[in-house]
Length: 495
Ligand code: SF4
Ligand code: SF4
Image (tube, rainbow, N blue to C red):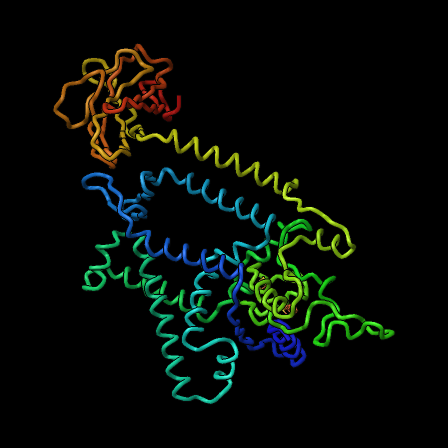
């Protein structure tokens, strides 16, 4: 009986007893070899190598700039991703990236079921790693079950201690690596071990260590079944043409242990199908389900049951792929002796592809045309204007210039929209001029208070829209900010 069946039986019994709690029935997945397992090992190795190595990858951005390829620099509010640097104003790229990720997930799920869950989800990757460690120390399924059911012994105790020690070690490196994405990896490693790192670094390392240990070591399939919302969503993305892990009941049933031709020639006796009811597919399943019961919420589409069944089919001299990747439509057709092809291009997948192409194009264009300078202009709230002795009107503005390049830049600032204006930097020493030169350090925001002088006779109805035009002295890249210039007659600051 599958573990899940046992659990459901226990839950039903608990309900009968009016006791709403049923103990978890532990899953003891056994090792397996085959194509799905090899693909899972490959993806697991790639994901872990990427995760642990990425913070150590260096990237030259010039003097005084962070040398880490991927860095989320929270104190300075920057996200560095190789050559691209994101500022807080670029938050919409994050929105775009999330939309891209979500639509890609929808597309992949509608094509191939929960392959994300089965192969690449961090919960799956780390659980797989923890299970591998467990098997190395405590042995395979039967050995673990036997020892767990037996009394405590030295052999059992040291294995348990070694396993949990190894899990904690991996969890610690996982939590530590996460911290390295937020600060320079070599520096924080030294600081961490010399006790010089800030308190939050130790707190967050502990938190991430604890969550990795609990989720991958203890919670395992329960997190996927009870805590993760994705299995609930994914049902709406699947249809009869989605390729999922499927037991070919038309070929396997009626299942049984006996000789395959036992029923042949015996009236009323059914000839047995290819399934020998060995339960190997159940014993390798990381969520403890029986795929022969049909498509289930708990199934991760990992395909390990396919590998297990293929091993059995080879040993018993039967064709492989009794459990296989297939669509429900094709299975129905096969059961009726028909041949049905895969339908990858369907309205649902075409819509996802369309949205994906549009989102990728929009993101690509936005990134390519991403400005390296930002300008913000804030008019003084009070006073709105000041009349000077020479008859001119003076308006004050706070100008903020974001220099997103890795070098200092001298920016020029012009004002258009009102004739005959002059400007000066408040508390500066330079004389009033038609154009200001405002230097800003590399990768920094320069803030200036600028006073603009204009003649009242050039204003219509006491106020006038003006454009502040900022131009990089290095690249010539320009940006404009619209504001207002006010005089007598202006009431609430609106034109
Ligand atoms: S039933 Fe098969 S595909 Fe589904 S989770 Fe279990 S082993 Fe993986
Ligand atoms: S592994 Fe194959 S033969 Fe064995 S119980 Fe599962 S489906 Fe049947």
